[in-house]
Length: 225
Image (cartoon, rainbow, N blue to C red; front, side, top):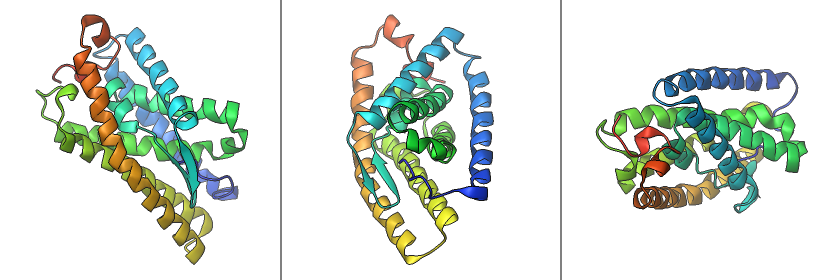
């Protein structure tokens, strides 16, 4: 979901800076919470894995321009379930930055727009997971419907933010509206595929469960809260 350069520019970018700063502050809060139950080494390793995963999702997996932005298989829910909210947020931000700096420098002016679009929906599914998933259920034991709800909220949040930036930056016109609708329709494919990918990854994690494997991921993947 790389929003095209120029969609938001000039003085309007101030709001993007503000939302990105807010996302950074909330990520710091989540990081402090994570470090209460995980070591610093674990936190760092999960952040690095999330960043590498994000880079792969954006640069290696299929992606194509549609409407106002690009469709990517971001797999944000997967990162959240495996790494936890804070490492996933940092990984998304770092992976996006590396991908832009190395392969798409033209995207960097939109970095704060794009990072807000990725992180705020992640915070939403983190909050939803606390209400949706019983405290005695490990993530590897989630059902398809649970994963679908999380994925739909994440991808729906991404689409909503893309639509917001488009209308905020370009105004509400026929061309912008058509571009947003086209992008949203294309993203339905991601919403259908991501829960399947999430369940496949969770099944693999469950099958490979061991003391060494457990230490690489967020504690909730294999244990109750």
